[in-house]
Each structure stands twice: as structure tokens, then as C-alpha cells.
Image 1 (cartoon, helix red, strand yellow):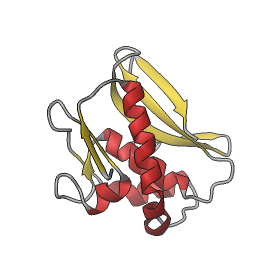
Image 2: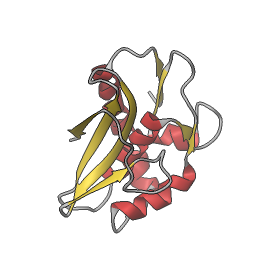
Image 3: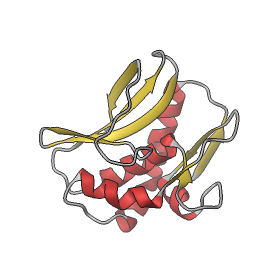
Image 4: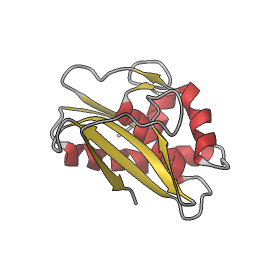
Length: 153
């Protein structure tokens, strides 16, 4: 299930498939991702490897981390959108030596039922680290009318 290409159904369906893609990418991340001192270092390592591109019309494309990097849907390593980047960040963070770190996802939009953007981050050592790979720098978050934060196991 390295690439999941499907019609968008709803947020719950998308989140379920994101979790599956993260699980699938863990062995790759354990080998590919170095250990970092903190989430900011991970951001600066991963950001240059990524290129933003919208999903094909009418399709929700969810690429696992290994697919995003090695066997990309677009034929260009690191090319994807915010949900592909979120899968990559969650997967990379899961293999980090950060005791007590709690990963999260934020869904944002104009209402509670339809998200237009997703990003991830980590709460660690009493600080929130937003790691939105569509932004140029870490710790940046765009302002949306509705933002929902979910912790990831």
C-alpha cells in the first residue's frame, strides 16, 4: 500500500489511511532517518527533500514515507502535498529518541467537517513544535477559522 490513490470520503477515512501509511513506513524510517537532537533539526533535514504539488483532481493521494522519497507517484523524489508531508513527519518522528514526545496532527479549514490543510508536530519537553513542511520554517502555523488537534499513538 505504498501509494494510496482514492476518492476523498471524509476526515475519518483519511486519518485512518494516514495511520496505515505511517505504520507501513516505520521500517524505512528506522534506516533512512538519522537520530536528531530535537524536532527543529529534523525539520531542517527533511524540508529540503520535499517539493509541494497538489493532488490530482478528485483524488486523495496518500504516499507513505518510502514512496514519497523512493518511488514517488509523480516520478520526482519528495513530491507531494500536505498530507504526504504529514505522513513523512509522523513516520520520521516515530523513530526519534525523544522520551516523552507526543506526536499530533492538526486539521484546519473553514468548518469542522472539511479540512483544507493538515500538518503535524510534536509536544516535547513542555513545548509545542509545529512541523508544517509546507512552510519555509519550523514553528510556523497558518491562521484558520477551525483547527482541530489530535494526538497520534
